[in-house]
Image (cartoon, rainbow, N blue to C red; front, side, top):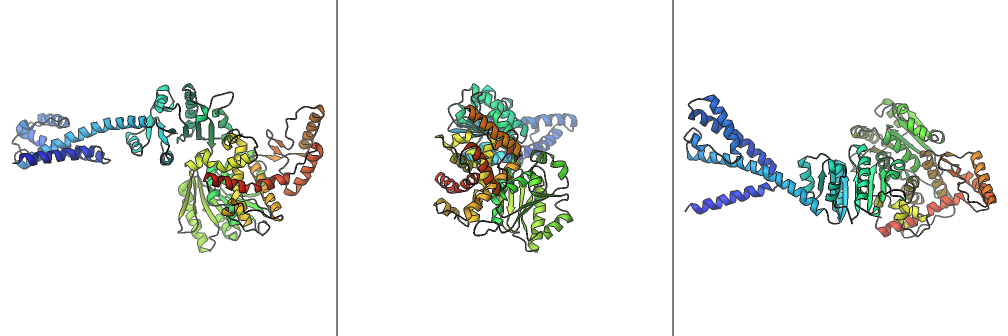
Length: 622
């Protein structure tokens, strides 16, 4: 009569154990069973062998160790210790067999986990052959979050590539529906690894964002060669990686002279983080404007820290803090300013001469800092905390916001800028706004640069698509278009309009406001060029260009120079005040007989706003 209950209970126990083998908690139970069975095994067999051998301790130790190890392969020594203290009754016998079951289960679980994990990895790789392919080089918090976002967007298989990966991390990624290709051959794109990726006949998107920044370029270069050997069409590929756009792009981009990726998106984390600062804390939102578009006050800001993020923040605030009728003022608090500012001052020689940028050689926690803030509570607009360490950024920000709250000056924007993005809290106790850079919206060129592409396309009358025009752009033109697109919302603020009005076409600044908007655009354009290292073209160089153009015309040969711009020497004749543009236009027209109007160029850029928002709405981006 007891046979059936025994069978049923045995089956139930077995099923429970099998189900646990595939559960997420199996590793914890396996470790528990292994430890308990070993401890109990040493007690039971140790005691039993001592009693069975009449106190022969050395022999008992050896037999105990060997027997406990054999427990994990299903072998027992019951006959040798039968009748001893712990094997002398029904209760002890149940415990004895439970001990052996736990030992055998833990060993079986470990074996099945190893085999199952390997099988699951291979299954994930096999399933990743469907749809488009997203390759993410490097496994870290940022890359995993990006991978989850790509996976959630659908239509693509996500495969991580890394040389050394813990099995637990592989399983974690597999559980999220993503694959891992690990090992030397994977990171060096050897043929056997490329075959596993199954790259032919599908769109391949690559994000090289390994924590070891230098390795990203090497991986991209080796993958490029591997894709060429595999016969992958460049138009089906794109790669995103950190670095200097003007240097790296030409090494990876396809051209008539070399095979390469169809599109190369190179980003600088500090610049990208500073741009996110502008998105969540637009400088124009802290300004007030007259009915004709003039600013009612100056734009005054503070930057704490002057490493790469501090310098990027200064440039972005400079570019986006330009308004007709206003003066830009910035104060940098950084004790090591002189030791860190060498490159930016050498690369952008006009910054300190053209703009009011002061250096206060003090820390953001110093008395000098708070004295300065206290003296400028009524004029400050933005304080950017950019120390290079997130913990210090938060400490400084929290202290500063409490200080401002107690002085009822919470209208000043306090924003933290780090290499992973920007962090902003409007007031003490309000929600924290995080704007990370390691997202599709920031790293996928088709998404991040959509506004810039549209603006670039407006001035390109060819029949190519927006994307084709963008791919053909040089790095400087792309950066210029991005800067212009980032500032476009300022005109909505200045005119007192809404995005809905602009999208509907109900946006037409009057004759008094339009020149003021054009002047603001010119100020922004100047600031961008100065922040990129440009200088004002000398009158001598301009006159020389005029003579060269006239000589070419008289000889009937094409003139390849641009009269007002020298991209090699980084000089531009238009880097003058708004009022001086009329004279420059007249001088050029007198030589060429054309009808150039440089003021109108700036105004035309402002008037592109409805077309930009209309195109974005059509794309579903607004």
